[in-house]
Length: 629
Image (cartoon, rainbow, N blue to C red):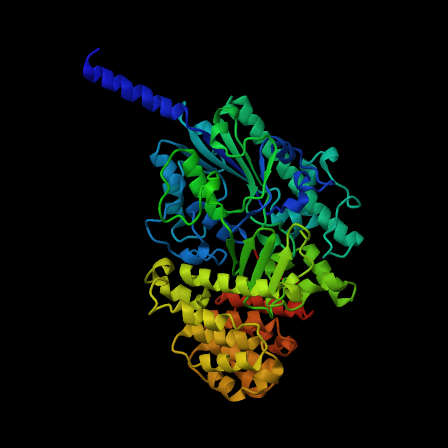
């Protein structure tokens, strides 16, 4: 054989060998699903035979967490392998630009010869999403799947199941749920209302059981549909060549889980199955293995690339989870604005504990959020609260939050007992506070910016790059003030009032936001500083300072300023004012503002319009006005 011929033969056969010995990788993603509603995670009433069967032969993770608590931020982390507080993509459907070097990770698989397909949801929360999708996927559509690849080509395929989505579990009308779920779910796979296990933070009533049964049945239908994809994989003789990932995109689509930055918002079911051919890639050799290895969504991109034999980009923040020599000691998670409801929490997972710092504690867990309030279950909870039918545990989601949550997820998976309130945990809390602040400074968490500034900055540069400059974004000074938020001490209020004069707008923002959570006495003692802030030229600080002063001592000066801003053409300031007014004890004083706004703003300023409608609904003055998701 001639040398050139030999070299060609050697190259061809080794390339073919490499291709045929690379695993296919299949992701089956359940929307909005918590492990507490699955049989394999201990719920004896759940009807999830497909996921249960995979857990019996695969690897079940008991400490898997989404990075966000609502879909689009979670999916940004999944597709980029990066934390949303570094890319600036933590606010739900904000679509800020990201640097060109950040690709959807399937791009690297395509470069290595993989066929990549997504069916069908993207929701990646980045600007120019169409271009981003085209770079990542060979096909992203309702028809996409491994079946469209070239013969013998390895594939990475994603399927997102919508049957367990919040629209089915709580938001859509009951008749729509019947049509979309019950009509497609055989009777033996359905669970009756009297069978469900009720989360203890819900009242055990016939009305609430009817709502909770929706969760079980929606997940049961999703499980059934996922099995159909699994059977198609078997029929195509690809099961022995394919590694399966089965997981949810964040916590359950129900009040107190989705959109909330406690464990329930982030904790997900997560199972991996390795066929015999690729068992050597798994460090968990036993079928039916259960691991408490901690993972979050930024880990999945590097893991898939590693399994495919593809180099991992250095900008990824996660790790290859099959490398158990690099187990993390802590995970850091985030939850930010969801639709029109602002929030900011940061969470540390360490072993069995979930520690959460709440930066806007005056807002309750069950925040006023159109897509949540649209659901019968939310309306029922609000009625029961008003009628004094809820016990102390069940009332908590409708009351202002504590500054910190600490839950033992092993002993207390429903997160009822807040250990942060117990003296025996105070030393550990100090450590977690310091760990969190250190991490946020190291990562230069850009989501401590007020969002109207994010909008303006992103017109000129990416938030990812902006955050790197300490001159532009003094993260240390910002966090010093932000970490005062919720501390109702005279010392904290003095520091907050001083920070109202800081040259950086984000420092001023957190000073005002912290004062909103202060006691009435501390606010009154700093009246001069608040009046000066209300008279400043920063409309965002004006709004928050006026609300703080009006809450502590209703007065015409603050009221007139709030009315002026709520009815102004400054959409972001008006939006914030309507949003925060709903969490005031004296919110009824602003019914006039809502009615006047709805009368005078017919087409423009859509964002505050949603909140003006919500304010009237919250006050019991008008029927609920739903908007599209």
